[in-house]
Length: 410
Image (cartoon, rainbow, N blue to C red):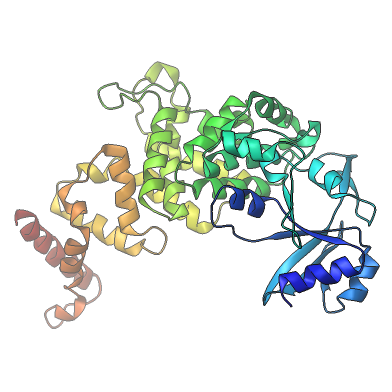
């Protein structure tokens, strides 16, 4: 069934099919739209099921069906309106029936640029809240006073700002501030989901800067907020405090790689500086060790994946040591460690983080692949006859260190 056939059947049954939200926004921006969100107006759930008996009902709080359109399984929702009756994203009474209009459905949405609909059969645009003008002005504004009723909308707005490159209106900042208390009780997976999407953009710092402006950074990410005001030696960090440095590094890593794990590792590389005592500033002795503790405590709340944790811990522990290594034995061990950890953090991404943090790479990391291959070309099968057990490990390391020494001398 094509999209037009689907829309025509809905029309013949007395309803109207719309596409809403991000797809319409991106199309109006001249971008390649992604997934379509369909909304049916003027048709009851029962009538829809009669028209499309193969549609699969998946919505619990309100009707959402899976329908195969143009050979793609698509979600089709019914226009709805909501009334806030409790805390968090579950604290709503939802009404979804044939009497709900597209205007009412769009009114409950978050920002004006996401509250635009397109009628499928005619292509007519429904824009009641100034979304097209805000797209032209590249600004995010809330649709209504209902913005703060779902607190995670504050994170979505910050994420949209970095994804779209839009500014955030003062009106939206005030609405975001109204989300603060309820955000404290939100499930960690909802917050983590928005963090991940923000780190997948090319300028994640915008996400944190918008949250900071809305006075939500301390509530949501206290480990990042704690970096504000933690001064650093000016000779090494003219960009300012540990927070500004972290934002700069995170953006540089995001620009260099599409690996969100690496961007997260860049975000947390100096996280230990947030607990540096005031009387120690601008120095941050042992911030690597402290950073591992901070990351562990953050994980107790956020429930990061093992992949994120292993990559973050590697960078926290090694980001200061790696650029300063000169002894062949330490370099050998570290190259082999990076090789071992490659499934968690590719060595090229580790190098992106070090370059972003220090401005350059040491020669042995610039030519990591070459040195790694030299070391791995030596294995236990090459050991003299009778060398085994502990002695075999010692022989193997010695040979590799000697090979590293020769390689370093060039």
